[in-house]
Length: 399
Ligand code: ATP
Ligand code: MG
Image (cartoon, rainbow, N blue to C red; front, top):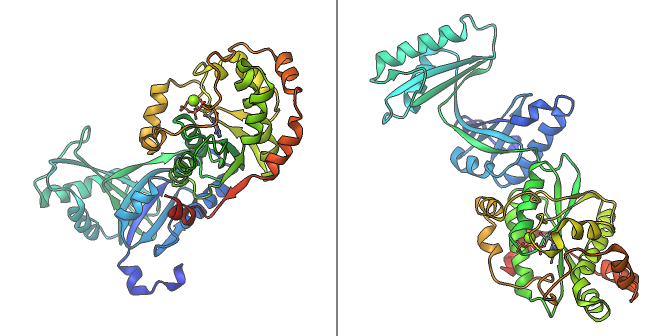
């Protein structure tokens, strides 16, 4: 990237400073975290002219349009603060000139906060803030307010120049996607599972998605809706894939061979079995889903225990203890809500008995499952899972 940017372009480039946040608490892995974050940012900005430099506490991105890039960075996990900043040389007159340029004249009060990374700089941070502050007072109508200023003018003195900024944009926090290895998210078209996916991405897990479809009982629109949700989630990842499970045969067999009230329990046990085997196949270490305690019959503690019994893989349920309204708030914030509420049926909403069991018995569930040769159907189903990669291109056709 660097090599194709000539000096003239570079001189005119704008500058973004990134603060890592939680990364800095993980001493041993810090370099790996920072490198992963850099890789993710490079992938996100692959079509932009950028130059990235980094050290242990920050990253700098030189770019052509800092506002546009800052907006994109707001969806990258592992970033604590995004700062559009200005670099001048260490001469206080130049610092003053740039400060006056960037301080919002509609505001009344300010304070200067100086950070001296270059400890050889001849005056202390306090003294520097005082000197720059009094120069600003002389040249403007601003007043100083050290407790509650309208503008905080941040000045960071480094050996390669002085960085000045006034506004810090909040980043998403969390860890860079990819530092934790892979997890398989059971992604439905509902509100909960995209939120579960988002929260897991936030912890640095490289999430891939598993969607169970049952055509013709579930429609092409239902699948498109799930892909659209995956596309929104992919804005926070960049690595997302959707694996589509042909679940019709299994659902029809359960419908035919198992008593009504156990249909959901057994269906979900089959989903977990498939998810477990497939996760191992693609190298995922955990399963993730949008179950929330008590939300429906299959999510009582008794049901969860009987259903979970088919797998010894860790199952992460990020929204297990959230109220529906809390989940909805996050869904709105991350942009999945409007898509999630589109009214298409899911494989979990077809063949649903009026009164599913809420206290299922494990022995009974196992006996009912043995009414049919589910192992052959499982194997066949897993062998026919469709992988959707090249997300953006696929979506352009689909949506
Ligand atoms: P809602 O927001 O309406 O509750 P949901 O997606 O949470 O929708 P549930 O019936 O509560 O639906 O299902 C619990 C969890 O099981 C989901 O969050 C999801 O992780 C998983 N799941 C359900 N249906 C599917 C499906 N068709 N494909 C993949 N995972 C599914
Ligand atoms: Mg739910």
